[in-house]
Image (cartoon, rainbow, N blue to C red; front, top):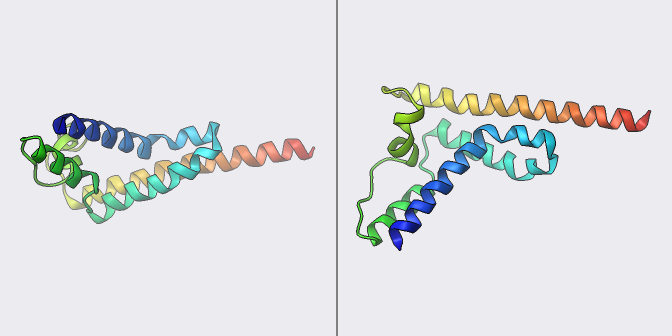
Length: 126
């Protein structure tokens, strides 16, 4: 059961990363989503920029140990995703660049949200 919980946590962790990186675009359609997305994006960027370990990683390791499995060293991204989404020789500088890209992509999305809201308000006023 603990292994299953750890696997579910991995899936949730992965979905959170996707949400942080690209779901700012959903805010264009549903502006209320910014209440959830903006803090998540700030957290995701901070984890990348400062090299923090997400609290989900120690929890996953704890569940794996309880289930008789092995914990891993490092963080979630390093263990599961580096081979998929990061170059082989990831450096701290590159990791910071990825954090800045998360910020830049989401700034673009939020600028589009603000423009849409302004257009909507100007149409209502006219």
